[in-house]
Image 1 (tube, one colour):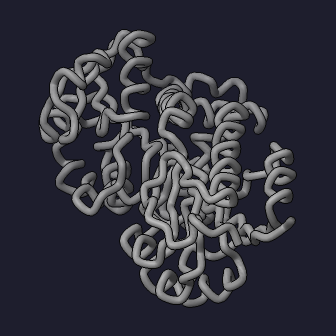
Image 2: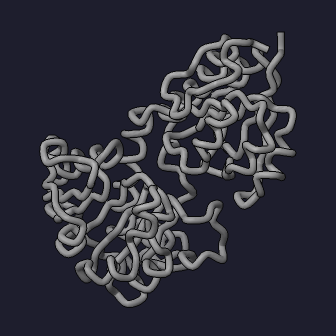
Length: 335
């Protein structure tokens, strides 16, 4: 019996590549897709999702306190990803909405791989070289002499799930010296991935390359700011596959323009989706990809499977695994 109403919110991939995920959801309810502006208010979001009791959510919009104050019958928000900084967890708890996430290991390899892929692109000027060929400028190839990643000193900001994958790959595959700053990891945690635990300032001052892999918190918002950039080595390369708000975009663009930053590769922006008017666009020293670090067939299949399982479990009156908010008023009654 189709008793649930399930909203797929702002996910451009869920169910598109693996339609069997939608087929399974249709067995427990009806499914609808929504694409909201990232700045939609909690009130408007609650009105749009008025009749829905389950949500599969992307990185936007924000499910804030206002949303939950007006939407008290929501049983589940299943994040189609590992982060949940766009959900007010305390407000969700107050109304008994379960919030579940993807296990970090599901995304680890894909995101680490993309961090390094974008880094190599900007260091070796791959995109610029391709454009020159498309414009019949093959003979200009001497303009695209880049830098090798091998044997560089690489600083990793956040050596948790993704950062540890980046560290292992760079240490073992590219023979890099790896520095790591992570206030939540002790020295033994860091050393097991072939890295050296250092201070934030030391990492900035001694790294040829910086990979940003940290979770976004109130404490590290814009931790790469004007001061941080000033501490970096001249000619540093930076790759960000974590969150756009970890950096001050104005500080990055000034660092690039002044030659302090040789190249910035990012899969994330502070405000998404990014548009052609963004300050990072049309700059040969900056690469922007549309938050696709997890976009491999293998990763998306596993992510979709987890979200489907979350909905199925709640429909059976069970708490999903990896629930960051597991207090529910609804779990004992399947309605």
